[in-house]
Length: 110
Image: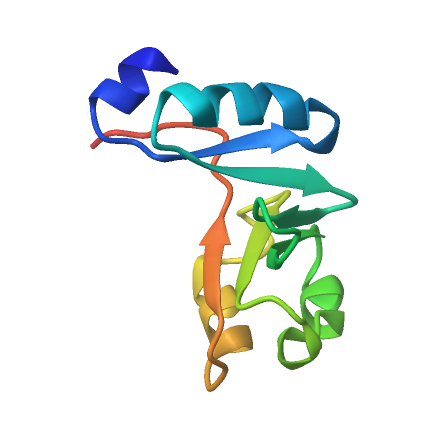
């Protein structure tokens, strides 16, 4: 974390059981800790920042209701990129004021 802070990173994600560790780090560096709890991401003031959704089929994507989510950000884990193209995720959130983040498990360079 020290190297990341020295390079300008200021947001770090902790599990909710490690709030004290986040507090300790916040006292020595300017960081904004985020906490994961029950597929949701909260800030240091317990404000909902993002929700997580795992999508493994087109039917699950259709059932995802982005307009009803309370958070402005949605983190989507596409369990099988071949079944659900990224374009479908963009289309599902078109017209909402949500920011969508996709989890990537592999790096691919051309």
